[in-house]
Image (cartoon, rainbow, N blue to C red):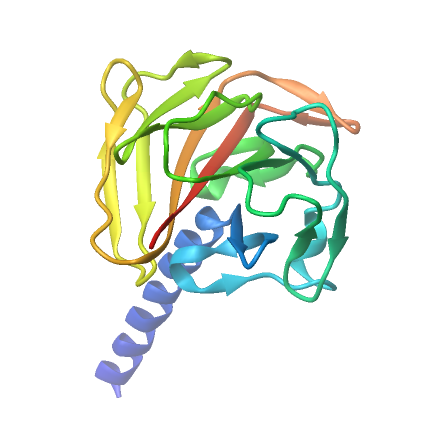
Length: 221
């Protein structure tokens, strides 16, 4: 009986740890195929895609533009488990969600934060920096530069998620650059998180930090 209770506690503890990991993992990312661009919110590594009527609705006011024309907003339409971005065809797109409410993430060691989400897609070649505050810029040949406010972010932590959920965790160099590998065909999502100690107020709620989360989507054919 005691062993059963102990096992139950262990299982609950593991579930709690898993819940924490899941809560930290949500981000937005882009997928492009057959001329369509889709914005998802969830966990690419866990196959989680949030739905309309649920947590996808927290991505309340996303915006998207072409990398080549960052002034004209692309039309967007909410679907069951993604947000469709029209008129992009297969061109590189950048998107963001900057209006999410302040969150208490102290139990995840982030503090009271203002979440900021960014995503971009890439053709896999060297491309220009985007207007994102936190940007993963493709340099070509499986190399990227992480930029914060238009400047390289030294020693940034980069996570690379393969289509089969295999993960790489890389440290950028002092120029914010890192090189990753793509062993299999399919969509790779690169993710960077940066916690900015910059207290403020948003929609009447005080926050301690700004939590920037940025992704880059690259397809190996």
